[in-house]
View 1: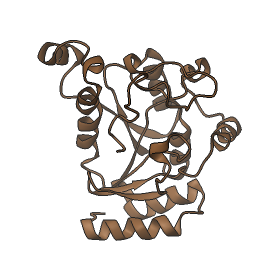
View 2: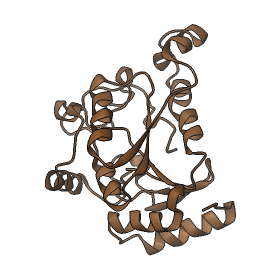
View 3: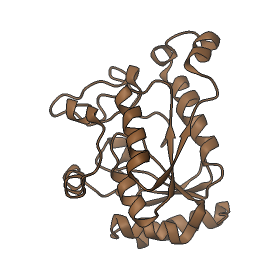
View 4: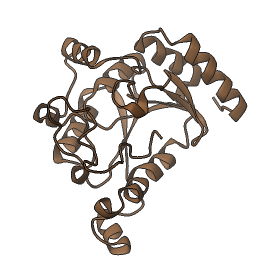
Length: 231
């Protein structure tokens, strides 16, 4: 399904209102019915909750993983396990430069000197390329994760990418997540059991202390709270 700017905005606004109280499965089914093969999803491989949900509704769905070159070994292991266990089509997306090439061209440890540029080169730009064949994408964003996400809709118009963005678990709380994962035996990145509650690239991720925001471990000590994919 090709979506024009005007039609996409109207579609997203109408769906956001109609589906606000729908279940995650119903929201995914709407997206599958609406976009067909033009629907994909992204996963950071912190866990397989969204993969589990989506693959039950849309077996064989394309799942995009951004292989930044800086991931924990546990994250890569989780990616490989998810690809084996769930009925999905894993698409591994890499930046235009390897880490060594980036170090050569822009200097070492760009993530420490200018994390915004590093995130753009290793996450934002690769995702932009990966999403080009699609009309809509599923994410695992939740309103309770951070202040920057409190107003997300279950369906949104992604102006930057000119496509529909679907957030089926936007309304879920951490208790909802924990219950679903326990009830469905969802695969989890082992780092989650070591107090890494939001898992990104290894140089920019630390453990989260009790009582901290789940994303407090990302870019600790900086005002940065998002990599730029969702904002």
